Image 1 (cartoon, rainbow, N blue to C red):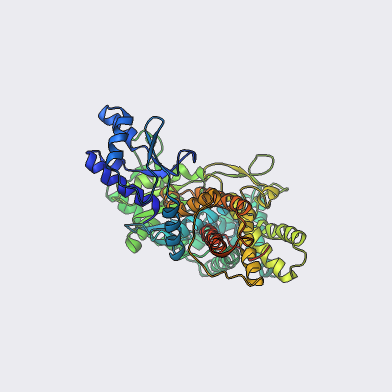
Image 2 (cartoon, rainbow, N blue to C red):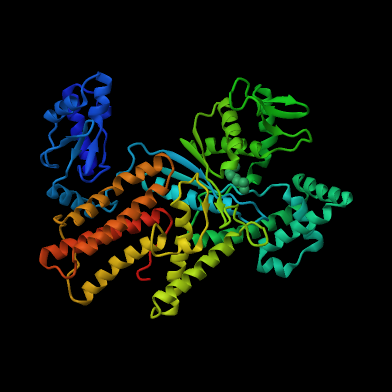
Length: 570
Ligand code: ARG
């Protein structure tokens, strides 16, 4: 049990004896270190309900609270906060427990859930745009964290492989294809075909009709068109896979939209039969009469020309997932502009009897330095592959400058870790709903709340250990003994690792983990300035080395939950 949890359970007992609702027993880290390390507002909340004086309620709680072995005598401050200042010995004990725990003090959840995380989901024959980039980075981190906490996570890449773009792609493939270009840069060539046909179609109604027919043929199973489609999907996948490989991201499922194609017509018929959907001017819709938000916004599931829609596929996908995985929750990681779509899909799903916790994990946009949607100079969507290549290249310049003696090969390896980490961290450190300005200089800086800053803190610790080994100093982990205030601050921050991941999970906000790690690195630097490590001696030196070692473990683990690696030197 963590120190915080231990204090909390003692508080539960005290509230029980005092006849106060024990659900009020919530202990959190102190907001102001001057008053203590942990605090609870239980007395204030209870006093309000009981219409009593909060300080009196606090006194009656304290008279029943047994925490002598953990904390100095708790004090009451302000409007009735109860504060705890943890004993050095208790803090040392908790840290030694954490050091020996390979989960670093993170308790798995009591009730593991099956959570499907639908993320990345780019569209075939198109480039991933910034929306996909954010979804990819955010979804992966959420999956890692949920798994670490013991949930059963299924990651599913719901790629758009059955859209109307294929009419154009197929026509282009038949008439304009450059095989060499396709070999070398498949998505670029597919995008070119799409664009050329799209432009040619504009003033050519006959061509438009031909293209439409190609799509209809594909949908009706024409073997030649199906073959072209298959190749286009395969080639796009190859390139997506390359990017996922670079980013160290994997999926358990990759069932694209096409997988659900055969389920669409029967689904719509069934919804009509059950009275959930209705005919409306030749189309089929689900109406939400009486709903304040969706009254005016029916969910269209079949167009009057018989075509199906994005929402139809999502409903079929959900039905499949319900049967296949019996999930407790499904998280859809897509941009905020899809909010209405998911509200409609979720509302329809409720009508269909789905009770699963469905969540749209929305996020904001990435902006260019001009504060408008990030685009390339020619006004196109920024392409993920190019972005990552540039990140690595820029990181290489930084690494070569800072560490010219590192062998070239290692410089490149380190640059990959730093460059990719910087891009991921710049995204994850923001509250997901805020738009943020993409800035190479900021994200690659070794100062401030950045990945390189955190990686550098880790590297610094590793170099202390290398130096110790070179000087013949023992680095075998030893009991941590807390004495100095900087050690205390670092120790308390380390202990928070066990709490922060649960908070991140509760509302899907990896930015809280980023902030935690940033503060951890900061505590470490302060500790390192105040407390000599290698220059101290005996048990103090061993204790400080061990404390530094645990800090490195938490940094490495925390960063890995963001999908970010650490180099050994940089
Ligand atoms: N392919 C879609 C897009 O690019 C995202 C799909 C998200 N997942 C879902 N089940 N709708 O916008």
